[in-house]
Every structure is written in C-alpha cells, then in structure tokens.
Image (cartoon, rainbow, N blue to C red; front, top):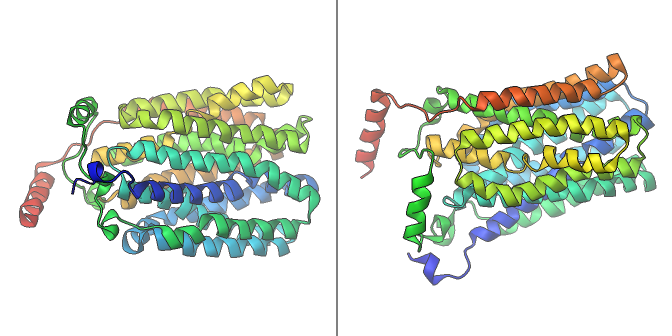
Length: 436
C-alpha cells in the first residue's frame, strides 16, 4: 500500500498510547501501589504478615490460568478483553473497602489484582503492540513498559497521601474509579485490534529504507520463517527457559515493590519517604524501558536476558544495604541497578519468542512463560512473609532474590534457537503450500 511513504501518521502510535495508558493505570494503581496497601494492613491494621503475603500467593496461583487469557485474546482481541476485565477488577477493588478480615481480603482483593495482572499487565497490552508492530516491536513494547513504570512513579506517593487523608474505604473507591477512567474506557472507544480493521498494514507498510532493514536482518540472532503452533512451541525448552529468566527478575521486583516500603519503615524510614524511594524503582524502569528496549530489537535475546538478570541481582543486594543504612544516595544507586535493566525484560522475552516461533501465535505462546513466572512470583510473597515472620526482618529475602537472579542469568546463557524436526518442517511446508 505504500503507507509508510504516503501517510505521515500511522495509527499504530495510537495503539501504543492506549496500551501504555492501560499499563499506566493497572501497574500504578494496583501493582506498584500494593506496597501502600500492604503497609496499611501490617502497620496500621496489625494483620499477620503470613496472611497478607498469602493474598499475593493466591493471586499468583490464579495466574496459572493465563493460557486461557491467550485464547481469549486470540478470539476476542485486546480491546474487549482489556475493558471487561478492568471493569471486574475495579468492582473488586472498590469492594475491598468493605473488607475487615484477612480471609475476605485474600478473596476480594486477591481476585482483583490477579485479573488485572493476567490480562493487562502481562499480556493484553503487549499483544496489542505485537499486532501492530513488527520491525519496531521491542521499541514500542518499551514505550508501553515505560508508561507502566510512570504509573509506578506517580501513584504510590499519591496513594500514600490518600491513606493519610481519607478513610480506607474512600481511598479504594477513588482508586477503582481512576482505574476505569484511565485503563479501560478510552481503550474501548479508540482501540482497534488489528491494522486491517482500518485498512492498514503492520508497521504501516513495507520499510522505505531497505539498506537499513538489510543491516538489521544481518544482525538478527534468529528469525523463524514459520509461525509455530502453540502445542509445538511449548514442547521446546526455550519457552520455559525464558519464563525462568523472566521469573528471576520478577521475584526481586515483587520483593522490592510489595515489601520494600515495609522493610524501609521497619528501618526508620517515614511513610512518604519510603513510598517515594520505592517509586524510584518505577522511575528507573521507565528510563530503562525507553533507553534500553530498542536494543532488544538488535541484541541476541540470550545476551539481553543474561545482562538484565545479573544487573538486577546487584540491585537487590544494594537495596537491602540502602534500606538499613537510611542513605538515600545508596537507595538511588540500588534502584538504578534493580530498575533500569528490568525495563526491557518484557520486550526481550517478546522478541525472543517471536524470533523463535514467529509472531502470529505470540499471545498464545507467552502465557506458558507466564506459568513459570506465576509460580516464581507466588514464591516471592511466601519467601518474604516467611523471613519476616521467622527473623523479624526482610533482609534475608533480598539476599535470596539476588542469588536467584544470578542463577537465572546463568540459565539464560543456555537459550538457543529451537530446532525443527523433519516432521514439523514437512507439516509447515505443506500448510504454506496449501495457503498459496
């Protein structure tokens, strides 16, 4: 169609913006602000740490259903999935205001966070980007990740102030209304699932710079010439290894984001100062998303995942030191190491999966990475709750997170392009011939 040369503006940018707004609201109001809610439950309401951590464990195990999310996205598209799941999440979040027991909190709030995480944070936003972008997939995934990180910067201090100024119930109702306004309503109105719905092509059409495209292909690690079926892809180890390396980074992220405010306040930090310090994690995730995500379009995914995991591990060690010393300069350094490399992690996985298996079935293949991710995230909450209950401190949890990150960094070095058997090659060749 020659859209790249005839159109100055490609609607894919609007899709990136809408996907970014979804992640902005969902990550900022739910994931990143979890630390505010946990600190209220532990330090204000006086609930048991093990019971509170169980909420996030159950939430994580509900995430094992994420392969069904991939099927829903393929059938109904990101637009409708984002709207209806966010509506359910907002209702559950508002209903949490009437919760006064740990058991009810586990069911009501745990359900709200799990639904949002399964659809909006982990898959739907990036499935929308994948449908509209190919050559710049990592770059635009980075923009979405940056918007999510921006939500993590903006909302935790606001939520901390709201809990100091309003009641528990009023704060959660306001959060639920804001979630719908930011995360779901504009998406239902303006989002389109595929370029063809507007008579467009992916990327806006063929590249107008063949020399640059040729150079990019030369640098590529591997690019599958066929779109693998989901059942064939999940029989290869690459899907699971990417899930493990992604999970190693997520373990430390959960430990810092969910329990970091509590750890700092237990070491003498004030409410607002601690919330502001944790917001630095999202700030540097934002910076890393913008600055480093385009590199995932060029670098070997194995190298990307190794560097991300190793550098984040250093950050988790520095975080514990900074929290106990009360030194803000060390805290900034810790958040640089823990946050900036974390920024492009989703883009590295997305590009790795699309390189190995093609982009068509990406929304249905990534959920199997998320199964491993989910199990590891569940373990993070249990580990933090266990160490807090048994030692009276969270320091051991951050040492554990660092060691785990270093181990998965080593595991990333074993990721190689999948080998296709002769039988599979014949199957896909026959399918391609039939399509022609």
